[in-house]
Length: 125
Image 1 (cartoon, rainbow, N blue to C red):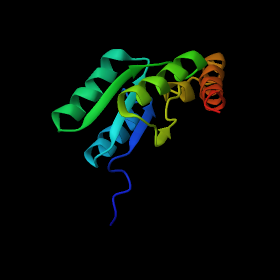
Image 2 (image 1 turned 180 degrees about the horizontal axis):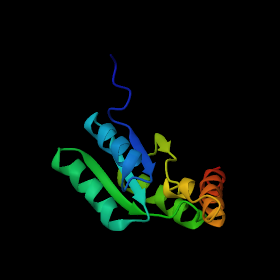
Image 3 (image 1 turned 90 degrees about the horizontal axis):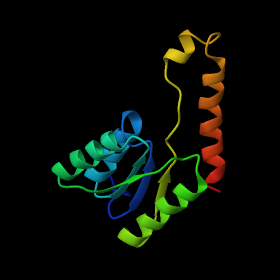
Image 4 (image 1 turned 60 degrees about the vertical axis):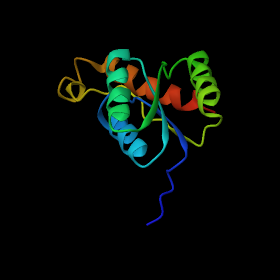
């Protein structure tokens, strides 16, 4: 099977944990240069450290996906370091599972979670 990831520069938002961390680690293991982004700097650094420990290449950039200025800075840092952006994985979002069990009590938090995911998608355009 052909490796379509090797040599690519991939930005992954929400890379401090969960699915974002898994995608960052897997794509790096396949030879991609990963630009990992999140608002949680400590866990973001842990993601990049795990990639480096396995011989991969990763750059940690703290950025909030709801901020156009921070997303622009993220893209600029990726290009400055690696010369291009080949893939953008818009993974970041807010939706803890606890919201579902307490939905009627936390409707505002659920709405915020959905809104932040929606807004961040449009800011990428």
